[in-house]
Image 1 (cartoon, rainbow, N blue to C red):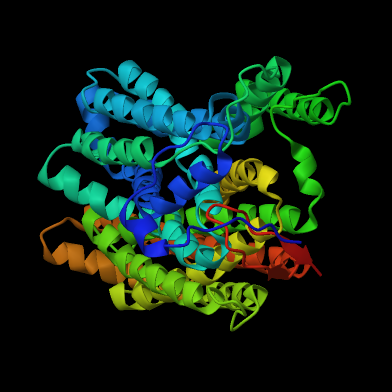
Image 2: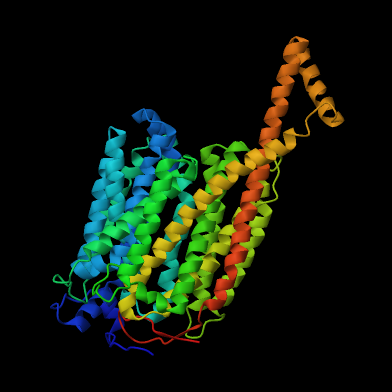
Length: 557
């Protein structure tokens, strides 16, 4: 099934000089105007997406300095990240409704402006409360910068160019979280943490200008459509409490904390009620159209995006801790170690684009996803078999091939998901896919943080159980260390105590290393378990039309 739309006869002239904006009812002329300025629209959308994705990771490096400036504890300063993610997650599934209600151009432009203004006030905040407030507002503005931007690209560019523009856009989604810690460390070391936010202002102004100037709405906003207030309330309550539980659960001992337990019950009840209400025949305009999940390929893609978020953000959470706690890296060195992986991701994204951007792709996109998953599993196996003596060389190659594999998963999966959709479902699906990736990351970080903490204790208890007078190797090392301290002038008693503390430190370090290995292997196991979902993806048989902004329709086998 395919749709066709007339393309301007003089294509070169159309690209060089944007067509004048036609009256709102003239959809063909507006489509031609969007087609004429499509590359400048893409630039505006990419800069907006980079801002949004960077702000989820760039701030992490600056948190200790911010805590010192605000006089906040490590738990309190964590709300700078939590507040942003909370509001972002709640708004993501609502982007389709907001786009229809206010119009794509207006909603995108206002979201970018909200993001710019809130970034400025984040950078000029003088208290923790002020900072958290503006971070929540920043998250509200940031929701559209991914979901609506991605749907806009699908609709503005013709299908035959999707294999080029989608990989370019995916770089912002995959590479930005990798370079975020590096950039954040450099800004914090050379300037102040405020510039982690103020840097968004000039970038955002450029993005807003390009979107306002070159993007035009093909469909008029429906200002009379009813608002699903009950759906909005249940959505905010369910996702908001779920995200809070995921962010705060580990440090509050999960369900042993009464607040976490109550919020978990509230989240489950609100989520069930939301699904019932969204599917109810009485709900003529649901805030989230979950009926799009009848599409088997979209449902499988949604599940795989959760798995990808788990692996991408989970791995990005584990490695900095390993590098700084075991390998002795500074934050800047940790960021630089992650940088080659980001470059490898960029290369693999371009390679994937070249493979699938053909009337007849060189390889089935599903084959590329399988290849990327297999390489990811190999890299996780390497990261799961490190030791306390491992150095930069031991981790760089594993991170490099892990980054290379990411492009072979994200690009074809993204293409298959959107190729299976009707034009009217693209915006809704984009919001759900980005929500799945974000929730997958939240689940991954929460589960891995708990897994890591419990396994450190488990390995430590197991090893300490062998440290007694009956263990000759332990006694030899204990007395050898005590003898060394005695040579520096310590009394025999003090030297023996110092040697015992040294052995305890060694045990803790080994327990940490074993726990990091276990955690990487857990991510590996999660990838293996979720990989069969690839078989549920349909093969997109894309028909390339001549439209300036049409969608890609696909027959699914």
